[in-house]
Image (cartoon, rainbow, N blue to C red; front, side, top):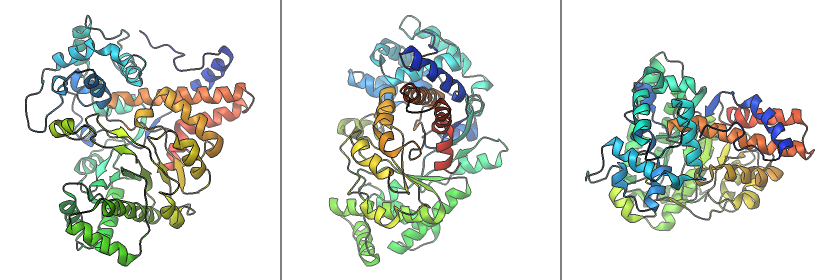
Length: 466
């Protein structure tokens, strides 16, 4: 099963030779991970990971959603229940179940990431099967107890230059403060995620807005809430934040007058909230956040288009982020126009757009990013963070937006050991794309080398102000 040195590179021998040269020049570049979901506690406390199942299976929705689709109960995979009900706690039993169903991952990026981690981190170059499951479990369990496989040591081993976490607007960031003061040189940066205090459909929205205002010593009013956001953003920036992140159902924005916005705020705080008011408030807050990014320089990221918790039974039993979030069609041209009318021509704003609606790359997103100075295209995200998804993105987006209006790659993962695997995958796919352009005499090879460096490192460093 040893990883093939030419994996994911072009099949044509001549093009593959060019891709090898390009990849060889960028494979060892530092990793910038400007958007992700690893836990800041891992780096602050630097404890050993508990067991192989907790490392690879229990927290990874890519893994357990596939097994669930084939009838494996989430309880059997150790996924905690909201009601505290019984769930498997034996890591070895979970691992054996994973091994029995491992053929389900044939052809998926999950298998590529997992096998990359097995070989490069643990020196295991055989495929997981029921026959070797216990032996591999023991080898991994023994290894993760060693100091060289604790989070900070892995950060250095992986060649990470900076990694961002995703943190709620109300988070006290105590782990980030501890990291700032501990003397370790790693850069673990918070990211301002205000979803809970801008989405009236959240169950605790009103209480959370009141807490936001209280933290900043502001009244619970429209102007007070905006001042509170500014204060919290400044707090995040004091601990290294360079970006915000916004996960909305749609990309809709609005630009209401002050009196109308204040009246809307009063309505959503009083409740009950209509669907239109909830969407209008989220839309207005995106435009407000863009204005704040013009002021404070935080790069703004928008991740719209996911229907969250599509499976009500899974949500009721297990809660958020359990593999039941499903993409929906998402429009951008009309949705973003109010925000772009105000800030789209302002080079002080960097708004990175993501999508789960691939059809929009060619029709709306690439033309928008290819025109407005404030816009950049984020890499393929979530369901399309895959070899073919990355290829489609480059082929569709580049002709209209070019390379400079994209932001390289970010891994968007909770699975720590998959970070180098994901960056390696992106670098191989991008080098393959560039090699084809060279082979077709659309680029000179020296230009392709410059672009390969930008896609692997330079564009992310610039877009996220790292």
